[in-house]
Image (cartoon, rainbow, N blue to C red; front, side, top):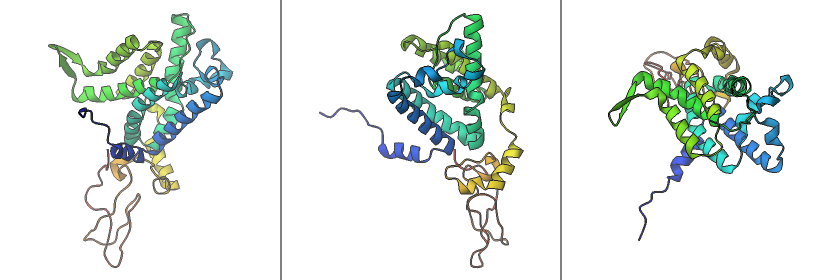
Length: 277
């Protein structure tokens, strides 16, 4: 008798990975490479882990390396599965350059620095932290703020609960069910995510005007596969797609825009709205 268990569609999984944008692909590659490296270099984890008492001018790199390290394969697998869809959505919204800069800079040293300060000066402890779950809760918190603006509350057993608290609920459940998880580290990641979602630290991202100039000057959208433009309201996720027009020849910006071919003017017409997710 066959069991009524439906396996995941391999075609959908393959399609999801094929559609991953550039920065998400690179981070997935780095996370995997670091995990493999730890199998052959056991000293890599103590070298890159966030150990509060070890933080100094010469070891500030730990604030950015600790999310890349994991204690075991299950830790790596669960964090990666949770992170990639959230990161893909973030990059699709903010662009490849912004995502790359934030996740190699501010989204590491802000939660890592906050964790270090709280451990040293408040809790007087020296608990080491590793894992990309700090990024998972950071991104969950940004999504929770967006959800809160559209749907402020949800109801459970007659109680109205703010939607922005969802990451906190998940965090405490994981803390009680999964041993050796860092509740403080997750809280620090969530705190930075809330600040980003509320717009208080958006200044950490470069100016869109500068990024548009760089993208246009280097033709990044046309040259680099899976690149996501910062100016998606004008060009869409993968640029403006060609379409027929009854007007004269027109050349539009972005990948696929072209002029007249065989006397038939081709170019973007109508509104250049955002394409893709």
